[in-house]
Length: 380
Image (cartoon, rainbow, N blue to C red; front, side, top):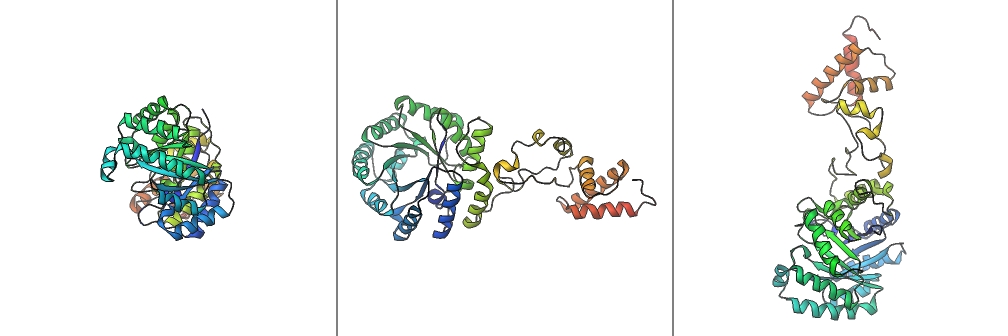
């Protein structure tokens, strides 16, 4: 199986998140960080949105980044003409393939197949490659979806995107869908574009890859419409650590990239967001920290440096154990006995319980000296 090929769509589908707007300079910075991360292709935007969007896309293309660039279009000649002004290497043409979308758009299967041929022929002279999107593939009738994919391949498409437009799929149905398509189209690259409405976008992307979709459409932080898309950093790490599949991405850039996109999108990262959340490498449980002090691998899957973080200090709180107390007192070069630690641990639990949070190192030291001052002598 080929290495996974990532197509980042933070600047297109990510910016389609309600209320998210990137300035041109922010788009360029995101693009630069994506290049640093080793992303091979990015979908920059939708030229049909107007002159400002076209200028933003052109500005990024003009900088000569190492990744391929892609414009997103509806299935119309005019959209393709707008994309030709934007200067991207490739163009993506999105077609409705489910009955619910075709009906809503006033189209039918005959129109889709006719336009597919006509628009691929129209676009090919203008771009290095033309990719085709099966919009709402997860709700399409299987027979027509296969016909659509085979037709796109025959008409000269470079890649087919299977879009789970409303986030309906699960890992099993994703695997079945991709396998079904792959059974009739052996060679054409398949791309999965998963939405996270049911919280399965990352898992579905992995399942699609395992079934033969080697191209993975993702965004940073899972940014995207409604509940978002599959998060690049989660997919890459899940492939590497869970599926034992390495990508070409430089994972040590993930934290900086995630934090910057969160800042400019004004979408804060949840503290427990997989991979890049601020607390995902933090530990409080006494049972865990006792082992972690001996070997980080005991209760931590990802080395901090692997994703551009530093190993985090243990939290001091209600669930801490003596090993954590001993660790911090030793680090502060303070004397203690086993009895001191038991007394101090009880104080820590009471304090954290009252405050409903972990306590700081400074607060721990204050409690230490409080315990110390209540003793006539210190047996340390």
